[in-house]
Amino acid sequence: MAKAQRPWVYFAAGALTGLFTGTVQMYWHQHQQRLQLDHRLQQVKDLFLREGPIEGSWIEYQSHAYRAKDGRTVAVNYGGITRLEDGQLRQYEFIMDVPTGQLLDIYPLVQR
Image (cartoon, rainbow, N blue to C red; front, side, top):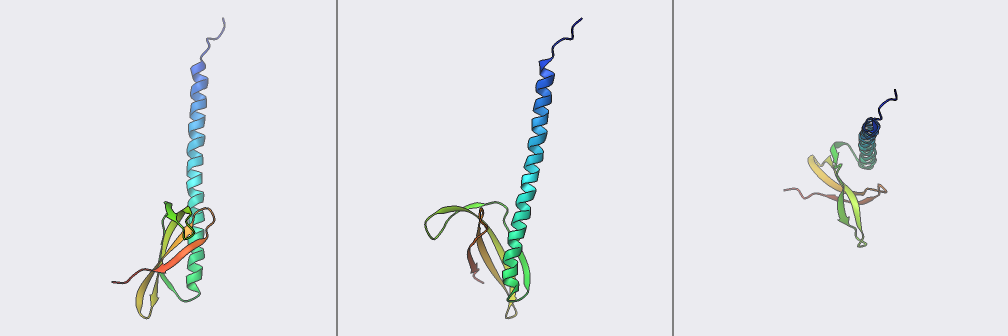
């Protein structure tokens, strides 16, 4: 007697393999993106460390659209550095181009 054909088994195996592979790829990509952003934040911190100690730092993992000074719209990440200057905490914010990692702007935040 011949075995009965069960095409749904092959379909299910393929679908589960694709789902598993896609999930692993998604988590790997997110991990790599975080490592890259952490490295870029460290580069900015190194720039600030040349002038003195840093109290804190942060970077947003979510990118945003930003109109550059030359009129182009680019994807950027925002980040910040807090440092002690003249006995007071001073905060700076920076804007970094996502594809290249180039700093587009660094500016102090207004103290209230």
